[in-house]
View 1 (cartoon, rainbow, N blue to C red):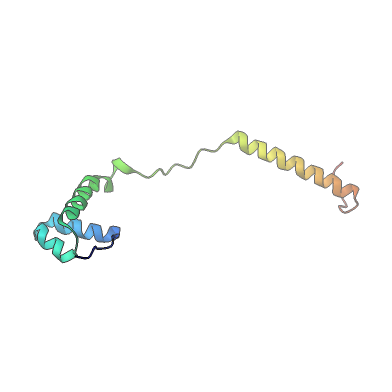
View 2 (tube, rainbow, N blue to C red):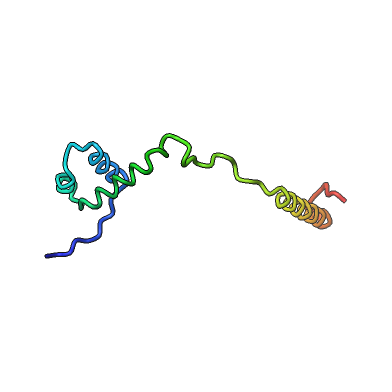
Length: 104
C-alpha cells in the first residue's frame, strides 16, 4: 500500500463538503467517496462550520473598524525634529549662498 501525500484543501472545498454533510442527502461514507476525503475529516469540517456559522451574521467576530490609536506625542516629536532639521539646512544653504532668501 502506498502512502498518500498530505493534501491541503481550500476553504471553498471544505465549505462545499461541510454543506453537503449538513444537507444530509448522502451518508458520510458516500460523501467521503465522492470528495475523496476521510469521513472523520468531513465530520470535523461540518462541526467547524456549525460552530462558526453564528459569527457570519453578527456579534461574535466583528472586524475592528475603528482606526488605530494615534500617538500624538510621537507625532509632535517628529514634527519638531523635522522643523529643526529644515531650519538648520535652510540656514546652512543660505550661508553657502545656495538659497537666496534664507531665514536668519
